[in-house]
Length: 211
Image 1 (tube, helix red, strand yellow):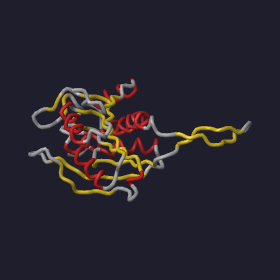
Image 2 (spheres, rainbow, N blue to C red):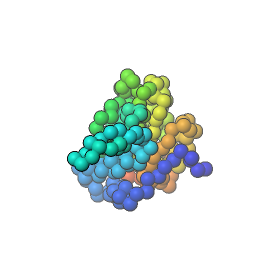
Image 3 (tube, helix red, strand yellow):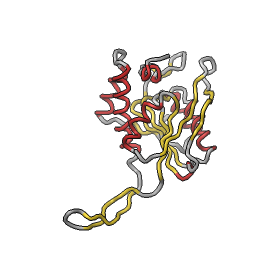
Image 4 (tube, rainbow, N blue to C red):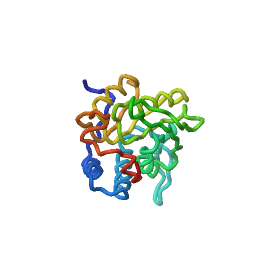
C-alpha cells in the first residue's frame, strides 16, 4: 500500500553517500563523516516548504525586497543514540534551531521501545519539529517518540530517516498519518530479529564503534 506522506529523497549525492554507509568496510570515522554529509543534503529537502517573506535589503548598489525565512521556528529532535549522527549535519545547516533529545532503546525480546530520557524546548508547540533517527525498522521507536512529542505539545512534526523498512512505514503511518516521513531509501524487508535488509547494520554501533 502506498504511503501518501512518504518522500524518498533520490538525489544522486544522497544515494551515493548512502551506499558508502551501507558498505561493511566503511570505518567508524568515515561513517560518521558521511552520515553528517547525508543529513545536510536531506535537510534541504526537509526544509523545502519553509515560509518566506520579502523584506527590504540594501545591497552595495540598491535597496530592494528580498526573501527571508519567516513563520515557525525550528526544533531538531534526536532519538538517542544513533540519531545524533543525523542531528550533527542538520544542526550545521540550521544553526539557530533548538535541540531536543529522546532516549529510547528497543527491547531485544519484545522489539518494543523503552524510554529513559526526554528533553525538548518548553515552547515546542510553536516550532516545526524535525525528528531524526537513521533507521525506521519496526517503526515502534519512532511511533513512541512522536507520541511523546505530541504529548509535550508539538503540533507540526516531520520524521527523517536514512533507511526505512516497508513494515515500519506502515506501522508509523497507521499511528501517525499526519506526520510526513522523509527517507533516502525504502529497503526490502525486516529479518527475524527486526533488522532492515539489506540495511546498513546497527547505525549506533557503526557511528560510535561500540555495541
